[in-house]
Length: 130
Image (tube, rainbow, N blue to C red):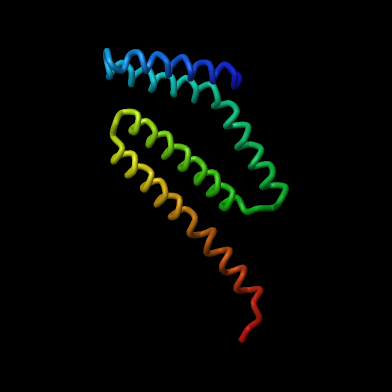
């Protein structure tokens, strides 16, 4: 499925959502949820290609596997948190969406601490001793 098909699917689902939200709000939300799942399944192959490319580049650059794995986890958390927040916003639960976004940021920060520590240690090692 290419981007044109995905865009058309999204537009059709949006139009159906607008029509159905006044008639049956639960069914309209279910339609959007199913559309999101279909789009995700359509792009899953591209996501795996991106991860493989990043891993290959990391190996060529001699980046430690731990850092590369952490970066991939951070990217995954960001997308999952955004998807969850958007779904809850569509369901009319904006406050829950904010908590999901906050949780995603906390998990990203938690995973980033070892990388931040390594960067600070590298900077300190370059500074002249006093």
